[in-house]
Image (tube, rainbow, N blue to C red; front, side, top):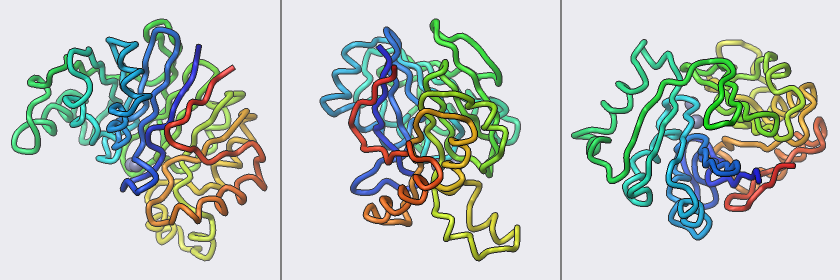
Length: 266
Ligand SMILES: [Zn+2]
Ligand SMILES: [Zn+2]
């Protein structure tokens, strides 16, 4: 059985409707979690506690270290008591620091209490770029262009997770033929359509992609489905359907994630 549930599909700031990035993926006996945003709070929900009831070891894969993707590490003591939590974090970290150094320094006094004092056993492992096998699952890590180093994860051939990235064309090859592509769709193209100066455009985008960029990449990569993620908190929830329509004009099999619902893979 392979399935995922989006606990967080929003960017930067959580809203009444969306948490920040957190996607549990259940693959047989494994529970992988893509990013640890505010969606980590949903492990207290019925689906979340049932998931934790089935798994004693949980692997979290971080795309990068921006706070909206790691803040949920501080929620681990609430729901993960007694679990073994392995955090795979990309290298090189910011300023050449090691993943372990970045996270143990952040989650420590006076910001929080130390990871070593958590009621679960937290291990931090640097994840390298390229293909590797983790607990019998083929995971491929690709570098991405963002305001800081960021990585995308391909899980076998059923899922490609690409958040916090500029729309570079290498994704077409990296995500080729994947069943589900989840791609950064932080903005609508209208936001930047009138901005011709590259520097001003870069400032308006903050290292992200538009829904239309995501749709073009999904189409060119031959993905089965495209989920728009890292939705901007500067837009209202009622504005997202229009964003979806724009993306569907380019790639019809695009969907807007509903948080807390299972999506099964073939
Ligand atoms: Zn983000
Ligand atoms: Zn970011």
